[in-house]
Amino acid sequence: MRPFEGRRILLGVTGGIASYKSAWLARLLSQEGAAVDVVMTRSATEFIAPLTFEALTGRPVHTALIAAGHALDHIKLASSADAVVVAPATADFCARAAHGQADDLLTAILLATEARVLLVPAMNDRMWAHVQTQRNAAHLREIGYQVLDPEVGALAAGEGSGAGRMPEPETILAHVARMLDDGSFRGRRVVVTAGPTREVVDPVRVLSNRSSGRMGVALASAAWRRGADVTLIAGPLEVAAPVGPTLVRVESTQEMAGAVRDAAGDADVLIMAAAPADFRAAVPSASKIKKGHESPSIALEPTTDILRDSALHMRAGAIRVGFALETDDGLANARRKLEAKSLDLIVLNDALEPGAGVGTETNRVTILGADGSTEEVPLMLKREVADIILDRVLDRVAARSCEG
Image (cartoon, rainbow, N blue to C red; front, side, top):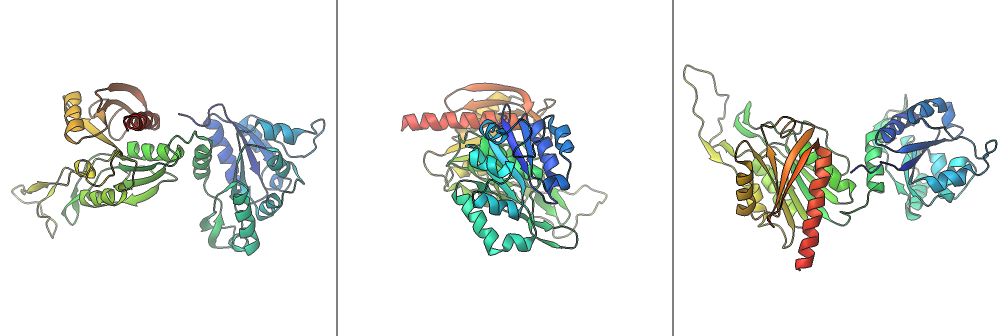
């Protein structure tokens, strides 16, 4: 699912130093398949040239409320947009927008559009903290605009660090995607696990596996984009944590089990995409195990079966999804796991197949259902696989509603 494909995004740029980030945002939106119309205030053109945005989007840049021969540009742009994003939104712009002014092209578009609006304030931290700016932001939210809080970070030269920094373009992109999505998971609480766990052998060694966490992160990101309230419980990840979900970091299988127990009680969906270690050292060494003439013997014991035990902590009717990473007899092993742990769905990965399994950007999976269904999903990006899995979760939700 590509939420930007075929969509028109109006990107407003106002006169702040953070406008250099807006160029990369325009690029990201275009790469995702959106047609991007850039509207710049007069002061914005003093920070970055309109030609930059034209080169990145392949579309003309709009700067004047009444341009030669185009007196109704604000109406045409406002009516054609699927979403309006203003990044950066300066304190001055937020004040004018909050009071319904239409003294330039961008504020006139806000009054004329019926599209969803995302404002991304960026300014000096003292300006953001000022009571008047806070009132303006609150009022903008009251009238239906989404307003992202600035991040804490380095400000303009000589101003140190504070809450006023514009979020990174990738963060803004994720919020626009959620704003545009169909909201098929809106109102649902989803818990996802991702990555490996590490079991201590001695102070410097652990038992672990090659899981990168990509599939779990893709699932958490997609569920959040589709409107869910998402908790991501993650072991050590090789990829960046996604924008949006609440992140709970863990190390050991025991820690992951505890986090799942705490989060699963009010969850509508649990997706166990993590690869927790199956064994741990029965008695971890208090000091580093030294290399000697004989290989050391390390007694192992099984770890907690998180997926099996999760049923004890979830409400009746919640959907539980497991993963099975296999090297042989995959379908038979996955079906046994599905039945033994009373899952609604299980996603089978072949650990030996090129381009699939752990540590890859792509995946080829088979989705097995408790109703006996089997669906083979061809090789594709993991973020695309994530949406297919979530679609099957919704199928199970609908089926369960009919059963009830």
